[in-house]
Amino acid sequence: MNDSPESSKYSDATTYDDEISIGELIQKLWRKRGLIVFLPLVCAGLTIAGLLAAKTVGNEQLSFYVELNGIKDAKYPNDTEFSPQDLLNPKVLNELADAFKTEENLADHVRVQFGTPVSTGILLEYQSALAANSKAPPEEIARINEQYGSRLSAAAKRGLSINVDYTALGLSKAQGKELLQRLQARHRAFYRCTKAI
Image (tube, rainbow, N blue to C red; front, side, top):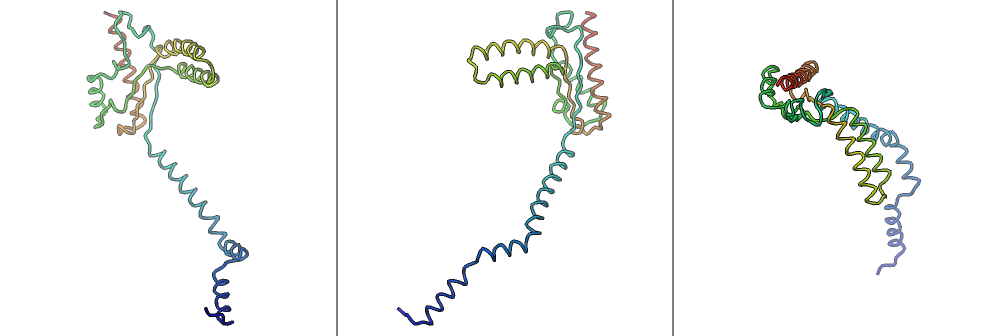
């Protein structure tokens, strides 16, 4: 081994050259403070811009509620079964596709189901009751299900919820509204036909 003073001096120098003091590190970070603050702000801004762009480019929907006057327990006055899908039979969809000259399949972008704003409120109430009783015994949960189940069914079957994704169909908002109105008129026509029979 070489124990000369020069070799120990050299080994000490290399040891100290590789080390960075905390003070130097803080000075380097302080000199780059603008970049450290600016870079996360730019990333956050780009993320927000991307989310907003995705939202504006996303599909736009119109919703419409139709009250089912004269239809009780999902039956027309002449006891014929009523289904929300009656409004989306192929004949109706073909007529609407021709009228609006859309290439898209209407069945993929028009949704008709039982529902009213009242049933949405009852559903929220039901979910709150379940959350409040999450640790309740099964008998209590069954009682809550029974209580809200009948209320939900009765409220939902009093009306129809019609949703049209007009941007996916290549339509303007005004055309989407007109499509909703034609579906509502189609429901009235169905109702008049069954009432007359």
